Length: 560
Image (cartoon, rainbow, N blue to C red; front, side, top):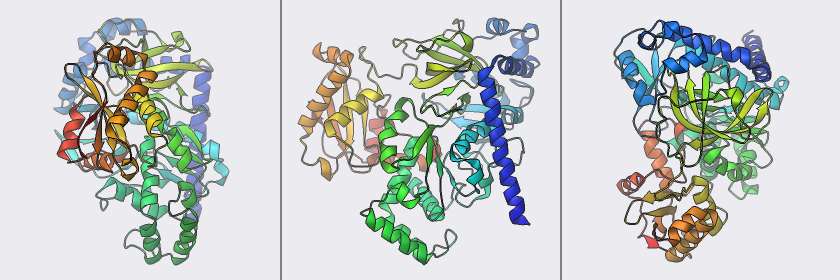
């Protein structure tokens, strides 16, 4: 009877994801009604609050009046209201007071506390996840799914470890499980591999335990927010093949019972793979991988195709702690239509001279229906959690339209280039220059990053894990070649180098595994595994301090 109930529950779950996806596609075809409903709901939730009274929202009826009444703000501008909520005051930003706060460091390093209300989870965030996963199950064919084909790396629930003024505080990807039937409740929520493992002190241990628990399953789908986590999963498999076979043969208390037959079978498979198995060697049934696939995350595409040959990829929703912006509804590899049923969205035309500074409070904005294909825009959004006319700082490009809804691709943060003198170096520039010089990567994890260093004049460091494979390379010659290639990739960088406004690029050799060590430190510091990502270009030289503190420098600097 229990098995029949489980099957019925799973079918109900799949039907719910299918219905949510169908609704999302209908909204794309005719978005106006949903957009109007969301605006009315946000306004109703704000009108009878301290914020609403201060801004005269009782007189507001239209989006135009909303713009006139509420200035555009960054988080710093909204923080005083959030602080009042944290102090226990009710009815500050929303009539439905928060029950918890989502913590994110943001790009400035200052902690942000995003209010989380039951209304926001039930009406917005929860239903969006059903629609998103509906696409993935549709690609696989829901009739053949039995509930054990999914590895979800996008959410690792665990006990609440932090509290502030009596409120639970946690990251979006580690929020605790909920019993709310209207919220996102996947059937694997009770699986032993899903929750954050308290006996896994490192990120690699956490992923290894998932490999051990799921070995032998007919896995079809891996979902992660950041592609870097899938890459690290594959690397963990490659580095622990003997350990995995041994633990499967002997069993591990509390993790996996002994399975000698599976251990023998995988020994043959891993030997055939030369001791460096791919994800598809462990799970030959793997058919789909999901993660962010735009901006710097797009640089992982070649690795993903090598780690799981022939496996299709789809994008994760463009989602942040503050709210969901796009939801995928088709097979587009990197962009999704604006989720007009998730918030009230406004846009400001963007150009590459934008240095990322906060938008003026009265900046004119456009509605989603006025966006032009091929153009780029900064996002201003209002969410039912109380972040009203929030200057997100993110930049999107309009790729095309899905029905009457613009399809947006995330480009990065406004001012996401590094630019001492107008060179506007990007992560893609650094990635292209280094990979052209060093060729195809000999490791499966990101092992280099650019670091802007201020000086008279300033310059860039390229920090590279200096392994045995690099020993035949001359540091100075490598730096010169990367510098020359970066000038080919970026004409503005070339101009500033020729004019002497930038010093030659230099190479900083690091010990092997340096970037893994940095990631593990962040994990130990409490950052959720799903939020740890690699940057091919650092925002400033502070990263050097981290490298020195962890004793990760290998030898001396080499200049061009």
